Image (tube, rainbow over the protein chains, first blue to last red):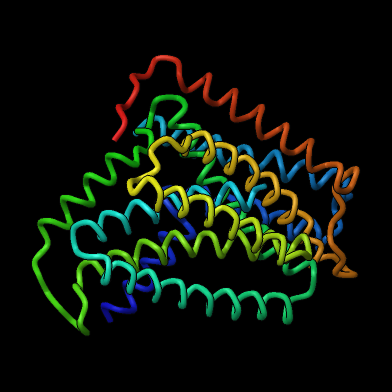
Length: 69
Length: 248
């Protein structure tokens, strides 16, 4: 059990790192993007820059949180 | 370039740990830990690289490794911006080396399998953790650019240069501008991660084809410029009104 917990902890630290907001935010942005792609609601030319801007917003939130610590 | 820079930083960090263990706990156990870590990394590289390249369609591959690269790159960029704004302590290899030396001297003597266990485990963990980041970056860039040999060569060149310099100097490479390199790597990883992750979302489209950025590959320098501008603005905004954190 300790080994399993250590294994999970290792991969959490490796992928998620210092701030879980970034991993969660990126996953949420891409999940939203996946829905928009699947429904064909927006063209590639609109969707790609829009998702890029959303990712910038995710980092901004993480930076503000980091600055407040 | 991305692979070379990222690998150089990781090699510097691994070198600091191994040097400290070699000096305090003996080179035999430190190098045994290094050898085991390198072997484990070689197996992981071969298995992960083969599995990703063989089993995933192109757009899904872009999505998976683009997402991981993006999360990874944004973490690097976040830390680099906070450091540049004076809100996070800068990396200091000399300080890390002193801490590792102290840990090595204070640890109890315990021999297992004919080696000093503390030196072996710390060296193994240091090389494995830093090496895993190199493996991850080599695989993602290599597979996406469809040129794994060049990515491997970039990492190998960084390794030869850093380890060669470390062997000659016999001390941690504190003069390597790690914080600047980390900033650059964070920008590059975030750029490629954004590009590939969004392209990979095409796996959810009717035909499963990769999404197209406006201008195709020409969007990459635009994305890089956008990330640079964002980082510059973020540092300026965050710098105002905060006290700098000393290195440590």
